[in-house]
Length: 589
Image 1: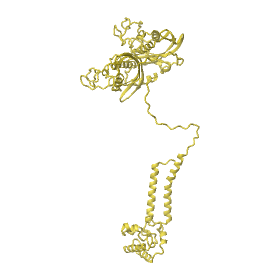
Image 2: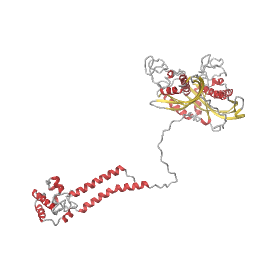
Image 3: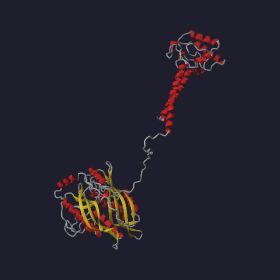
Image 4: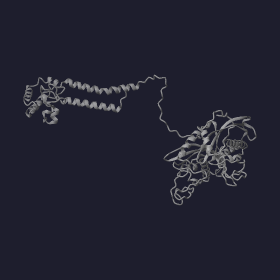
């Protein structure tokens, strides 16, 4: 049993006060009108002078309820006489039969000036309510009360001692389980590098975001994020970040300024990775989306402005007010004043140029709140020539729960959709992509990929070229295609399939020497591919290498538009296009 320290001190204090008061009243004769020491003092004073005895007799022969003033004075005189002859310091003379002292003590005489009424002491007989029987209170009664109080006072002391003894004696562990070590206080760890979200977490968080923003579409957002990323790097290279200030927060601007102090003229930006890393939702403030970028680009460095190729990995935090609803893919990346509709110029001004309405970032579109640059180097990253064993190829296919019902609903909403026709498109894109990759001519597949996907493939082909390597892919053969997931948002439909296939896969250097892989034996593998299409678009056969809008030879601008008709070719407006490739070991529905 453990005794609280404060409780123990309080109890000891109270019992100490009780003992002091008991002792005080016992000495003063306040308990029941008698002193605990009266009988002892009476016996020691029995040989006193006869004047004291006669004085007591005369006092007793008077009124039984009170003493007269004459007897009081006589007693006082006798007391003085008694003190002079060496009698007791507390009283002089003999005790009365009723158990009270008829002589004043020095204490009462000094502080009460000898004018105290005898009733304060108790006059004996039945006049004192504290008496019992004959009105006497014997020494044993006081001693018993003192013992009880002392005993009660010792109880908390004993409990306190026992608890201290028990606390230092180790307890026996009667179980075979290992005693748990004391838990350490959690320490805040510095956040490490972000990694791409798995498919399950990504689907869950996007669904939560779409409850408040039903128009949110991941393909639209990824395209927007790449636009902001590329244009921000260009502005940093020109040292004119104020041109992007409506899309960049103060922290993001400061980070870019600190990295581009010695570089300028950023160009030829190729984004290899643009992956969703995290989504944080806030019902009262701003929602945030974290995107991982991996890219390469040219910059001029030094006083001579020598071109250098930079390789960068970074995480960009996009933020927007929680109540804002997303715009569509056809809307230009611009911000208009809510009050007058004027276009906000990309400058550091914080108000509308026309009506001076205050501009607040994140109140209309996403803006970059912060940037963490993990790596920025001018060394060409090496490409591994090793061919590790494929992971997850033999694992069971991961299906979206209720995918069959979703397919039935999708076919009902899209009467022209045909599963077999869709699988043919998948096969065509798969085969042509392998050939374009092997020949390092990715432009031939641009018609069937989203712009972010195209730039990712272009990035890696450039990496192979920079290292003098070539990844040869030959005889691609699809063994099975399974529809595993259907997702639909306000602007796009997305179908995910698992492709089981095999092909010859090996790597050579610039001289044709095989560095890795096998040029004879096909390598089996499987991957999850996601295709997207604009909502409501009907199937349309398109000849390879031709614009699906004007049917002329396909020639695209940097933004993916046809140079002849300005139609955006790789935005899903004309059919299914490849949006994402995920490996077996990382895919979770």
